[in-house]
Image (cartoon, rainbow, N blue to C red; front, top):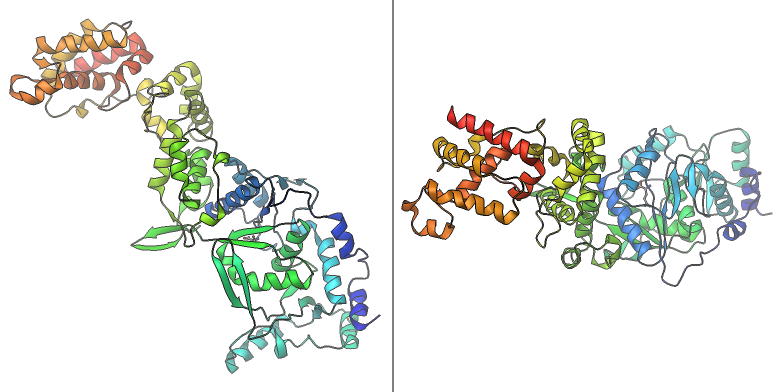
Length: 554
Ligand code: GLU
């Protein structure tokens, strides 16, 4: 045994498995040529950022469009940052938007797939096998430096003004301890970390081809980074390389804040004898502020958390459609041509992603969402409305579920037509939008009346219409009835005629229907009034007209 081998045995006497055995246990996947294995690898900090959902979506689409595999791996090596329920928050967040995984962590202590465990805190045994091999090859060594010594090192480097700071080269004091020195320190019980013996050179450069950002050249890593902490838990950098290798990840897709770590990551993959995956680094989602751009922030922007969208009542399809418009600029054209197609049919292309950060715009999200909701069936709208109201508006939930046929009829108005209305962007708008269908929510709003219509005119119109209103009229009969009122009261049924000779009339048929509309719904603008009156039914329509009439008479 050489000294490295002796050191490895001293450090890991109980690790008998070999990297070769791990290779057999987690063999290359039998997937078709070109299939991509991607993963979303968050830390369970209890918060799914919209940027995280975006990265997860892009990873999923890459796997899906190539018949590959999309994995959820939980990176919980940093116990200080972890919060209770952090894992379930992430899973709930992804599921809520339909970004479901093929493999990985799927619930509390629940996993699926043959390449697990998928939670780093459950993989210590695997990391130790790999680290033992690195020690055997002289690529990792124990470092006994205390926090104090490391701070003193940093201070010294500050004083000397060294260009590069950290634990490397001549500064890496434990790098060249002899085996006997190492053995004595280990046996004395001194705590130690395990560090990489970085093969990097100070003037060295690494090049890689990022699938989004293009060719990138950065300085090589020269730091002897920590691989295992004193408690034997790996650092994220080391753990992720081992995981991506043994989960057979082909494409690492993640936020571009990780670009600066790529030199270290590539070095780790190579040191371990692993094939380096392909990289695609996504630019962060930005927000416009005071003419400038900044990252969406967890502290300042409520819309940074994915829970915001559920609370507001955006359907998951809207959020995903919107994220797809940010991802590929041709998505909107595709969506226009295929308004009802499932998102999975969109030919997503990683190469078409923007190199600089996409701008997040809630107004645009609302427009996308209005389109999405406008092509839903009434049943779908009702089911979304019910599930949103159940969590966020119990009175509305009560009203909608009291008579679901009635509720469905409401959402059917002006739907399923070549040009459906695009009124609703999110379900927290529903209460106001449909208020007039329910006496409990209805508010008369007679002051909505256009200025050209006086209370006397409204009174005349309503008095005449109450006698004429027949609940069983067809739409044509109903409209003819309104037109019939016009001439005797001094209005014209013909809008063009009114525009030609405004002085000859009090108004036109539009004004007459506005009076009726306001009396019945309390609104000046609504979807098709005939349908609304049909749904409300004779009693409600008559009662509302009578109340309005009494108001104008007073
Ligand atoms: N755990 C890292 C994070 O929280 C993952 C980085 C990666 O995808 O490699 O973002």
